[in-house]
Image (cartoon, rainbow, N blue to C red; front, top):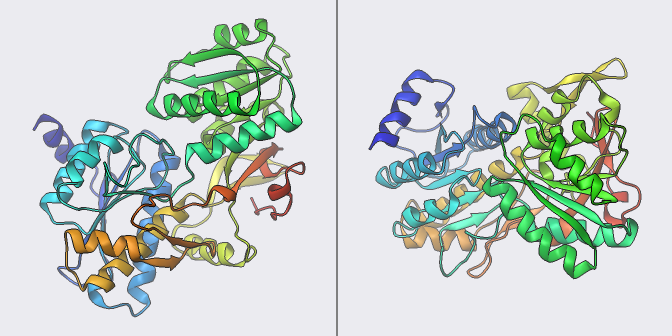
Amino acid sequence: MRVLGALLLACALLAGTGCRAAERGSAAGAPLVVVSAPLASQPWIGRSVARGAELAQAVLARSGSPPGAVPRVRVVDNGASPSAAVAIARAAVREHAAALITDGTGALAVSRVTDPASLPVFVVFDGGGSFLDPQAHPTVFRLAPANRYLSRRLADYLAARHRQPVAVLSDDSSYGRDGARQLDADLAYSGVPVVARIVLPAAAPDVSAQVLAARRARAGALVVWAGAPVLAQVIRAARSTGWTVPVYLSPTGEDPLVRQVLADHPAWLDGATFVSFRITSEQGPAPFERFRAAYQQRYGADPVGVSAGGRPVLQPPDWAMFSYDAMLLVSAALTLTAGVTGAPRLAAVEGASVTGANGDQRGFGPDDREGVSSSDMYFGRFSAMRFAPVTDDALSTQLPAVAQ
């Protein structure tokens, strides 16, 4: 009750920001989709999750979809707190929500709330494997790249091109722990020797000693799986001492906070490579650019907060595509069930299929909870504060650079 009370108080204080409803164009009594996201504590992630869902609601409202297939959207700040995420899930169950969309905070605990209610949950950021199991946790679906896909691609890339021992650094968050665990298995499988495994506090103000330990272990590359503040601190600690070791990052390397922290020495980020999902599909860049145009019409361009080459650097709304696609799947499921909730709605999610924001097909089956293909992982490399696909990987080379 204390967590729920604090959550309600936060909603009252943050009206229009922490807890907001995007109900324009929705009929009164329309199905509810609750969005749980870390708006204040992890702004890039939280904003991506919230805006993608809100944009999809607006598009559905204009599309002529049946009124019962155009959900209302309520966005609640989970503060990156598992207990708050569980409280949000309980409230969604009480209100008979049509779905819960979340960054993945507390996903395993959330599933224990949503499974008995057959409330579909779409995880649109966290790639961990602990909460994804069609039998044990049937309500949890993922529309985001899985760590096991990202990690295996990174391990194979290092084995083929780097050929030196690495140090693995991760933070002590669930995101960092899950990533490091997966990296251990995949680096061993690919034959990449690991000379140091270092866990960093997620709130560490200085990681110089740990980076020095990796250097003394004679690491030929740093592989860092952590939140954006730790990624930036690792790069700063290495480069400020003149260590030019190659640095490979988790998908959070794309977080604008990394570039903001390193804005005083932009060259330090040059060459840093992150693994993520390809932004554009086999159809080419046109579908994503249409999505981006709709996003920017509603929200404007997203400035990173740094400039390069005399121009402000802009962040593409790539991660917002996943919550957008989740909303399309919810709408499709609502159409199939004519508003029926419970197990029929869950079965409808398993049978629904939509064309996503970038042109990829999105859908699930009874035994499949991954919405992003294992073949869709790519590598982005920074130069002058902007990133582009690397040129020494077969899939990445085929991808167009996205304007920033």
